[in-house]
Structure formats: structure tokens, C-alpha cells
Image 1 (tube, rainbow, N blue to C red):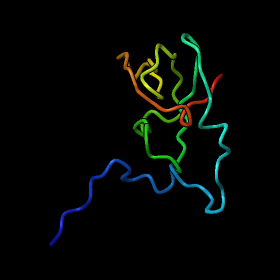
Image 2: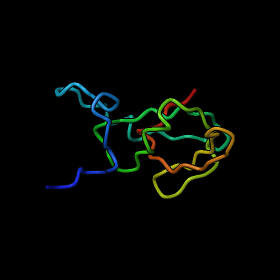
Image 3: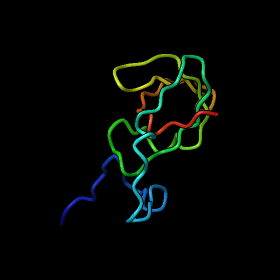
Image 4: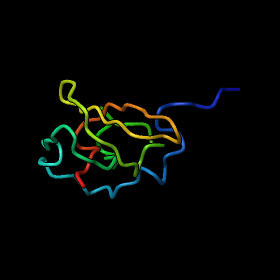
Length: 94
């Protein structure tokens, strides 16, 4: 008997659903954010690179820096302050 796969995108069949013919515009991948700007974590299913963990979907955080192409976002998870590294296609400015 084989073991069940426990990959990064497990249990995300409905969370990360997208129409088969839909492809996001290139401008979504080229967005720029300033330090101190508030953003919402909005996962883009067609891009797996730089995707934050699905638990953070819909959370609001503040951009505190940049690391290569990715942005470092600081947000509360319960009572703890966490830092998440995410690419711009997974973020949306408020």
C-alpha cells in the first residue's frame, strides 16, 4: 500500500481553482509595491513560484522589504507576527 501525498498544495482543489482557459495578464506579474504599503494575499493558481501557504489567503499585511523579485510581507497569524515572502502576482494593493 502506498502513502498519501502530503505536498505543498494538498487539500486545495477548491481553494486554488481557476477556469482552464483563463490566463492572468502579464501586468499582474510585474506589479510593484512600496515599503509600508498594505496588501492582501490573493493566491494566483497558475504560478506556483513564490506562492505563500494557502492558510494566509485573504490576510492583510504590510510590505516591509524586497528580496529579489519577491516582497516580504509582515502580518498577524493569530497573536503572532509573521513574515511571509511572496511574489507580486500573489499580492493585491488595498
